[in-house]
Image (cartoon, one colour):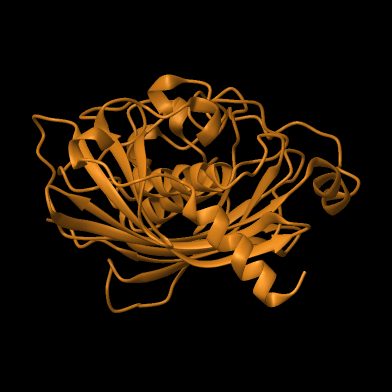
Length: 315
């Protein structure tokens, strides 16, 4: 397919999504669960989606006042729910552009930055996610890769930004990419860190085991976790890996309330359930306890994910 034909097809894909609507209509109801790869209605944060330009869209999202997993003790935006909202928006946009529900999504990169804002504790946050499509690739006339930037706005004020990329493959290609998958179950979680040490109210939300080395913790995966395994998966999901990195940072700086002011995550390889994975933290700014840290997820010394983060300064 020639360059001009590709451009025409991208224009056709993006041109038929829909017309702008009243802002309040973005928050009337959740989008269809399957279009954000969720089974539980309570885990669907997207509530609407409209096109505002040739490559620009606005996704409506609602963040709950209280959630069993997501949330910030000081009322500021939670980097984890922001990341999950962006993940849902990228997947929704891809399906809207014709990607079949049977196709697989691989996430090579995601970054999130959080503004110093306070959300109203009396109402769910209605978030306008302004999406700008930076890159699209086609294969065989179908969308095969997508990169977007995002701006999160609540009541007209920005609360954060993000960038995400997705690679999209059909089931047969996905199986070829994975190759032979080593059999095995996730490491059991009998030796978990205390939930209070990593900012959670229940042990079920803990992703790290007890450490035998300084600033290194074994990854612990509960395949029945209702948030990360809302639907069946054949590998450890990226959002769980980001949360494990955040918990490792909390443990490393002894701040259970710590959250990311900024993180940039690169996903190099799928994390199989059978892998023994270490979560290792390196403090890059030794002069500040709330400075820049790098977190690597390692399997037999191979880096599976690398995350660079700056920690929020405590209020």
